[in-house]
Length: 373
Ligand SMILES: *Cc1c(COP(=O)(O)O)cnc(C)c1O
Figure 1: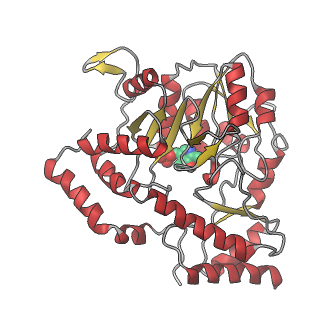
Figure 2: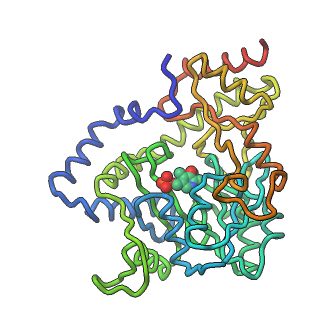
């Protein structure tokens, strides 16, 4: 049995004709930069997320950087982020000479702790970056109320949760990325909506801000050859937009398939050993970018699975505050106990749109076998 963490080839084959036709159209017109497919895709994604503007860019890391540039964050300004995240979130903060201020995460949901955000907000705090890790929204109601009260921007990192929906206490529903000041996402091939290379986008409900974002992503110019600010060059290729236009039509189907896999794991792994299965937040849907379990026997389980042809991944093995590049004076091991513990216990199992019963049966039997041996 050939089990993969993601099956991009299988996913492509199911929609090959549509993808090929869409890419061929770009080749025929040779509008490789800012072709009409890019504009169509931005409009399509805006409709999907029910957000006013989507500004495509070159990758998710750029999206985060452009967001902070468009909000005029200045060197020395503080940005609060969870310490349990992919490096990109912290990287752009440091690159812009802003100060990353880490907070720990909630153990069962893997997203930032609002009580620690409240403690760490200072007069220098200009933005908070919730990361909707593994596909489920952070505690956005509490976070947005706090940010509003303190007059701080919220930049959502939606790279793992595109399509997730959050329900507020008043019944209003919003998509991940459409709740904060700006949402940033990635179309890296293995993300829930992935292209055939790199891609990313920003989204916002604020039209003024969308103009500023567009300008910052385009060399700081609104009018060609007139540069009002120092920007960057970050675009989504037309060929990638052509792929994404097709795949966007399948995104809700992909979400259903991932949830089917997650439910299968939930049913079949419940009660195995000391396993803790991913908890669902009542307010958020889960798009299951990852299905992440926890066990004290993580490393042994990972090797056991590997020997039996089952891949698995550790997101993330070293917490950011313990990474050489992100060490801060006085922030030692022990500073973020939940994240440190997660780095030793989390394991993400294969989950993708092409998984079938027999693969899942084999994976679950093998995991149960590990715990009863
Ligand atoms: C993938 C990812 C990014 C960065 O996206 P790229 O397109 O690879 O630059 C940022 N944040 C998180 C949480 C991610 O998973």
